[in-house]
Image 1: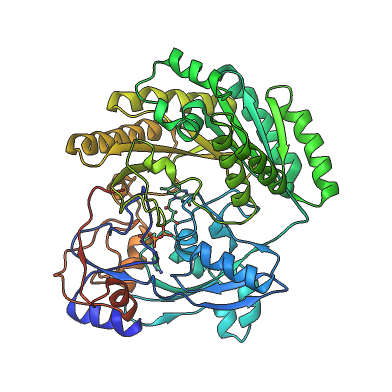
Image 2: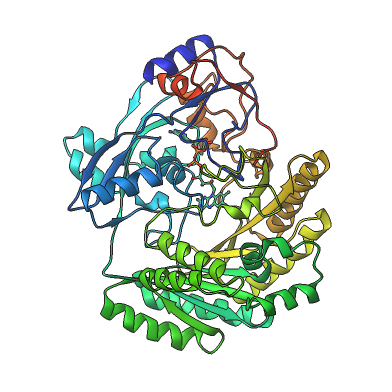
Amino acid sequence: MGACLRIAQQHRVRVYPISTGRNWGYGTALPSADGCVLLDLSQMRQILDFDPVLGVVTVEPGVTQGQLAEFLKAKGAAFLVPTTGAGPSTSLLANALERGYGITPIVDHCSAVTDIEAVLPDGSVHRSLLSRLGGREVARLYRWNVGPHLNGLFAQSGLGVVTRMTLQLARRPQAVKACLFGLRSDADLAPAVEAIRTAMGTLGGLVGGINLMNQRRVLSMTAPDQMKGLSEAELRELGRKHRVDAWTGFATLYGTRRTLKAAQAELKALLGPVGRRMLFVSPGRARMLHGIASRLPIGGLARLTGTLNSSLQLVDGEPNETALPLAYSLGTPAPKNQPMDPARDGCGLLWYAPLVPMRGQDVVDFVGMASAITPDFGIEPLITLTTQGGSLFDSTVPLRFDRSSADAVAQAHACYDALFQAGRERGWLPYRFGIDSMKWLASAEPDDAQLNRRIRENLDPAGILSPGRYAEQGPETPVGVLYTQAGAARAGSGEIQEISSGSTT
Ligand SMILES: Cc1cc2nc3c(=O)[nH]c(=O)nc-3n(C[C@H](O)[C@H](O)[C@H](O)COP(=O)(O)OP(=O)(O)OC[C@H]3O[C@@H](n4cnc5c(N)ncnc54)[C@H](O)[C@@H]3O)c2cc1C
């Protein structure tokens, strides 16, 4: 890798590393600036180290959620894969670098990163100080290392090619449960948010995360084919038919059987007054329910229990594709006998993922804003809010569009921009930017220190590595020819892929 970057420097070739390149909704494998050669690391698939007692694992960029699940199973190791909705084929390392999240006990995947090895733009290798001082093991166990937090420089940046990462895994607890509840109407949203904040503050590590999904979001999973062009009244009617409330809550609980019993009682007391149809279910129970429902001739029931079952497996650290059909829900056919890949299959999707403070009124205002703006662009407001600790939600709003229509593509991008601007006026900014939204970084207030740019210019004066990624773009450099063995293996022929940024899945 060092040699690759030295050659790139010598020939002023812009390179853009990807791990599995499935950054769906944020640009997939496309770089954030034109004229880059893709450095595809997906064949770097080694699990380099695993401590079965302490649960820390060191992985290369191409190690996927699915691969880690198989590895842990084969070893009989009682740790959970930090799953996401993106499914088994996505990179653990890249997801953590992008500060992705799930709702297993360690929600924020970047917070589980302890150690990193990265190749800098001049081809030299960054290793952490603790490990260079001889503390290789403790470096893998202690997130902060010593001295400046240099490992943190590589998340959401283009400062290095990360070639290995150590992650702390969550121990598989004795008991896992999900709590489902409904909110009868939008009027219950603000009190529910207040109750969720109290629950997150009171129940500490026993609650992984809590999701709130609006009716359209849940119906897009349970009745995708019946969702086209519905008025509000028709939507409510469809919700009644499928027993989907105005809002659905989904909380994950991890602990011992005794602590979960207590946590269940606390959640009931806190959320019961505002929520209804509260149901606590374990992965085992969900599997059994689905087994029974699949044998009953009741229309739609098996689909419902199937979604519940696979969601519970996800929560239990078993990666699966249960969330991916969302990307296909405008009608793009999902593949029959191969893994889903929304980008390959032609789905159009952009994620708008702003951070919203966990206050009832903020959430109500945010939902009002997103619901008012999206229809102007022919896009349905599907809204999820996921707790990020006890004071903040991140909302994910999937902007789905017909990728074969230039007009729909333009509308989706205009919708994103309108949401971005309206949210920004209220202080709600995305936790993560797609390649098309990096342009907004140039509109930040001027800063005399401009530390990010100074670090970049120092490490990469020619601007060859990941130009435009979470930074303003450097000067254009001519595209040359470069490939890694891994990238060549993936391309199958060793041919070079020159990629342009642009509108995406
Ligand atoms: C239906 C659906 C549900 C989703 N659910 C979730 C979810 O629950 N949580 C979530 O976080 N995301 C989710 N996603 C978004 C996305 O698909 C995932 O975050 C996915 O893990 C990112 O793709 P990847 O792992 O292949 O990363 P890559 O595409 O490989 O990498 C992402 C970016 O990180 C940088 N990068 C990657 N590797 C390196 C490296 N080795 N060195 C330096 N820089 C690097 C590059 O700039 C790259 O563009 C979802 C997407 C869809 C369609």
